Length: 215
Image (cartoon, rainbow, N blue to C red; front, top):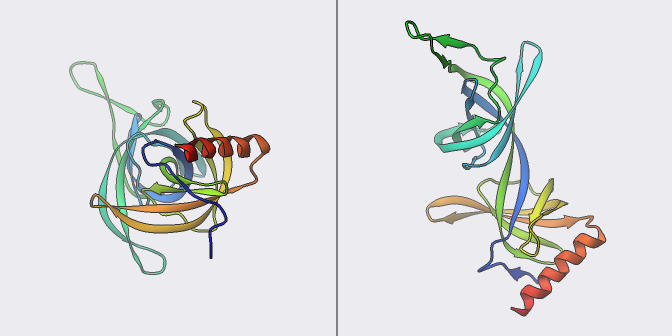
């Protein structure tokens, strides 16, 4: 079957799209300035995150930025399949002194933050990932991601085109997800289709594609 739209390669130009994903994770430790967690999704440094923690019948929302990540081993999925598990450290946007106590160091009157270890505490993780766009067409785009996405799911995204500094928000639907090897790491090529673009958004994409087609 022939493709409905011609795809234009983004080779030699940097175009990115931001997606927001949500997954269940495990809290490893926390302090008033940061938290550590384990997640089936890979968080790259600089990734904005939001963590929801349910404690004693109340909900605590923490926002921050990933500062480090590493492979932590393997975990078993609900169907018995093995999947990778990643550790990550998140620096909070604002210190939460109201939820964490501080301990005084005896003799000098100074304080230091306490880090509490909380293995196996379940949390809800929401994070923004920046994907590199590989090609684009009037109907959608192909992007490279560190994480798989389920075909058929819809994502609120921000598309950054080089014609203007500001992105535009649009709804995109995942159409395909293919695992690939890249410099020894596993990545995913995600196919998206645009959903309900308004006239201005559609014209901006058409104008960008026309310029790229002429190069």
